[in-house]
Length: 617
Image (cartoon, rainbow, N blue to C red; front, side, top):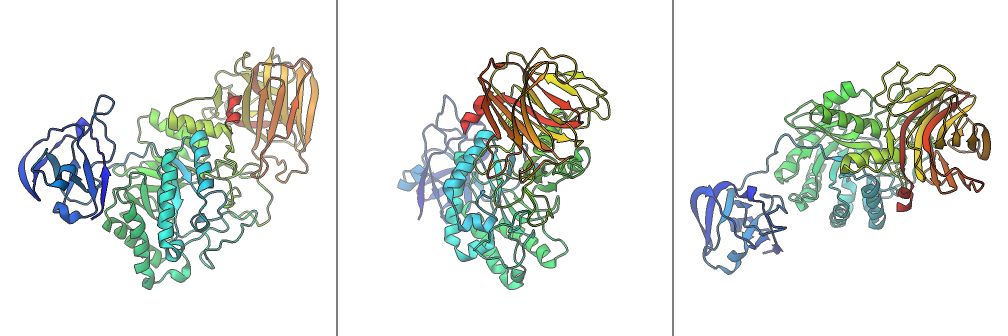
């Protein structure tokens, strides 16, 4: 018999009315239904032998004082427990509460409101097979530490693959345990996905080929076509059940997903999705079992995917599809890709929508943002259908962190982290989500200085030429300023002003600095009611170039007399393009703003943070 010592403490609320059992030498005598008193400092032990309990499970047990009161440290009714005194057969001992052994049932609807995460394969892995077969816990540790530090994520969606289980089942189970230990250290509860119908269906092996530039998810491994035979169902069952059985009561696991994006026109897929749900339920996991698409009988929670920007429409419909179950968006949008007509539901837009539902008193779904956590060898930084060999995108379509663990967007990181932790670090954050179109409005707290007519867009700030808009405090000194900027015309330039003092009419009347870009040049200069250049950067040779009607990321850090400027960082080169010191009477403090010069431009997702966030790296 396998014996493991555990200490279990339960809140006073757990002292519920239940069937009272007095344990004597190997037998139990049922007492009346009543509320059970709890004694301090009692211990329980777990057993893997359900027969010893006669088919019953402990619902609650004696607790121990913690911090002056009682607290719950494990999920009740999730493990089989034997009272400590039963091992040495000392009479009836203290009272213990038992319930008949029943399958775990869903506590509907599930509260998914705290589920904020992303899909996860490490940056080194082109697919889920490479993640698990070439398992690198040191890299995973570093990436999840960055996710905790910058984003405060609470969950990850992680794919498994039957080929890894077929080849090395014990190694896979051991690696899952190691992965869960890493997740637990960083406050993350992952869910695991067993089968997938997306992308490559043939020629899949344990040896993953190098990814191809431009090819979105080019090495992702679906369930192979050659394995879609009834004769393989027994091994698929073993795969599902062995993984779940090892963690069926594990509070570190959030959910089990049997099937991602099943092709419902494929009879074998339909059969496997139904069987996999039944196999999972046979193991009786404490966690919910889910599957795509949306709501159906084989998912305990509505499992939604959305890559649109119709938050008042389709997003809301999916969130409210079955309020008895609740909803999780296991794929919740992506950024506005260069040259496309609209956003695909960026992380900041999704967070804004979640907050609007909170404010309206509506249910709040869980979300897995921007497809994936890492910008890496999955190559999902390119859009669906991008041709092989395409240049790097200006801003990754998917992915929240670069391979070195720094955020793709500090504005996104602030929006997500503020939402998940409640802690705000930003001196100023503006997502422009509340600007009505087509009215010409200045965002609250901003002042507009213009020489021409101005306009504002919907979910972004649209400015005509020769305009600046200023916000913030003149006593701000050292900070990081970031925004996305879209040029609308091939002439002129647009960008950010910082350490602004004494602003006046028109684009140039101010004391302070400006960093902006045209279609071929990055500019940094100082303004004393006139322009004085400090540095330029040639953008013509950059792989991701400068295109019109494409969002570009501009970031500035000022520390004392040092000025650093980033423009469209790359996955393998995300350092500043300009790094200099203004040593001749530098402007040392001032507010911030946006500016256009001889071009119309759009601005979005602007944040001002203490510059110390860069030192966290």
